[in-house]
Picture 1 (cartoon, rainbow, N blue to C red):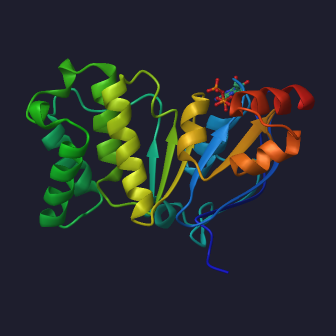
Picture 2 (spheres, rainbow, N blue to C red):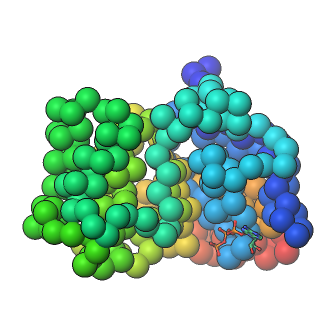
Length: 244
Ligand SMILES: Nc1ncnc2c1ncn2[C@@H]1O[C@H](COP(=O)(O)OP(=O)(O)OP(=O)(O)O)[C@@H](O)[C@H]1O
């Protein structure tokens, strides 16, 4: 069996109460995986632990076979993390920001420039490529942050609600970039509350409720679990209410 892109085992995290409980989750290399769940289910907490931003209480996280808790830098080198709160420097233009981030990752300058130019074009940022990010709307900042996360050519892209607040055109650009990456063999895992996005884009869907994985599979597999022809919305509400 090929090494999975992400293998989580017995992952556990509490704040003032348990938030992630004994979670096992495996994402295959090259897969597009959507993580769904009600507000407060623990999705962001899971992804922040995978991205190395939050220390788990227990459990293991392996990214392409790299133990992310033991060797976080090696894990981060192959991973992109795109938060739902984009952080981009106001006083840089997208071109400067991408060159800066590529420099942090020590990407060779010619490759960095080519990738930055591609991302700027794919995400429709060309007309603003040399304007200061400080004047950008939240949606534009989200796209710059996404470009920044992809400039080191990661093999695993982790996104928290990447489409929230984007207009239809920008959402299409982001979706096209992600689908293009998956076609190139990159693995994508993202949370979303837009069930139609999960339905259309994801190969497999995982449903988290109260810090546990309560269901997982292709849309057809999830449908067969509730035994009737249903939309993902029906399935989701059914699963979450069953588990409540
Ligand atoms: N740093 C923190 N300190 C204390 N509690 C936290 C912290 N981060 C998250 N939580 C709590 O953990 C729970 C899960 O939060 P999380 O953000 O992971 O959920 P989510 O599934 O991403 O929700 P949403 O869909 O609303 O974004 C919530 O009750 C939240 O208040």
